[in-house]
Length: 300
Image (spheres, helix red, strand yellow):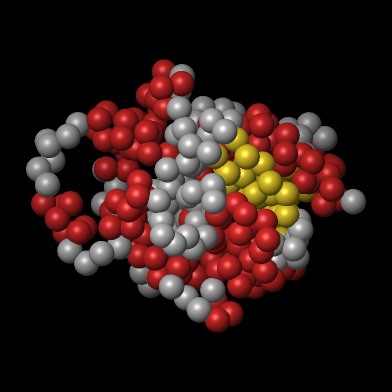
């Protein structure tokens, strides 16, 4: 999404080098709490620009590109599991010394944030989860194609498809219809930016590898039991939590919201009837208002 130009730097963490995008300076910087934003599967730090801009006066925000996504190269050891991504984000927080932070996560980034908050509560002030990828059985039918990426043989089949079978604009349009509740309501500039970002990803040699590896990581995390189970870890989170769900989400069903509200010790819920999977991009004003309340309460 378009917004204030961000500064980007790279930070070496255990097993990877992360691209870190710094948000707008904002006003009243001295009183702001540090924030860290973690994107979802196939996304990048740019997914958070609109929300970071709106919170710049209360949250000193930075957004990371997870290993293999955005401007970050794949991890050196090839570990694209959920725990691998958590390791990278914890490594960044330790290297930067910015914790505890207001932690934000969308989809895959939501699962990363939950596990991080459970394992390292000292690094988290509050937690904002936008359509978090927590285990949901059975998944929505519209989410099955994403899950299929984790199956052996499917990625190889995708690579054999003729390059000219579908143009970039059509593929980007399909993606927008998957993650937005009302893709037809997108401004022309936002739509053009989405197409440009999709085209850029196609030119990155490791993009498919990162997508497939991380999809497999989510599926694997859904099957974990005991103390590593994501719902069990959600119950261990003591920081205040804002849960954001869209009623038009085609990837994470709203029915998960009830279980999430019960799992977290201190949870509040924002439901957006017209939002899809990326409410922070589609309805940033509404999400920002709820986050402000969360940050204010956490400061108390």
